[in-house]
Image (cartoon, helix red, strand yellow):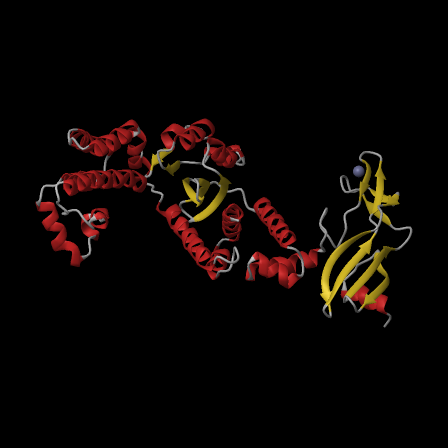
Length: 422
Ligand SMILES: [Zn+2]
């Protein structure tokens, strides 16, 4: 068999394309395959499909193809152009490559398989392409994946922010709370970060949003009210975020009190920070006695903690009016506690009360989103340990298996971090 016929078969070329000649070089190991098409053949206009004869050809271009016997293989061809009455001069689509790609479809497929098994730098090494080329192939795969993704209605959204680097660099995560998937990642935590997601949705998808769980963060609130129909009643301030504000208040009370006590030579609160972070039922048994003793001392910190614990019961109510009544008595207690951080937190929550109580209409929390968040955290921790290269880890791979788009998006956010760290 002649090498041109061999390569026509190896490349799986179909009519009218064929191999014109093959050039094999051993140092460096290269195969150059020159393609042409049968003369007199007709091509379709890429816009309307009209059958036309070739008008001319572009200058010769090359595409990276799968290696042959360890030889980097390039396809060379001139792309036929047609001149359509309706659409003017157009390049005809190629059977072996996507428009504007410098790689053949077969190579892209192999590259994506490799990227699924390795980090970007590892894949680039195996594929013998640059890091940027590997990254670019991945990004294009993500975009294709996103475009192919079914436009489904997501009833319950969770919006969360994630710190990705020091100096307050954030990304905004949008999660599907029912399916537990990351739907969108945007840089920063501005109004526009979330607007970008809403703007990508169809009218039907926007109308299908029933509830959105989030922290009391004005830019997210503003974006949701602006773009989600009836958005104001659909925002649910996430209970875990609210409790986080209370936990911080307790910790501030502890810090101030500890400082005041130390000034009098009293170190009662020394080493107790972590104890006050537990909720009653989660306190490990071995700490119970110590904690009971502390609580019997009638410390300001103990009072702040009790107020915080009482707020948790708000979400146990079955009906909104009951929860509202409970809130009122809790609020009175908190604001009369003479504990400034507690008063401040209580007022913040009160300012957002209506959308705290929407919980009783929708019953959603951001727990799913937080779960994804902690997976990302785990990936980041490993990253810090390895230090050397951005993406050396198996966690990412297992994420990828479950949710390719999310994982690539996470890679993106990690890259964002890595770029900043360098
Ligand atoms: Zn046309």
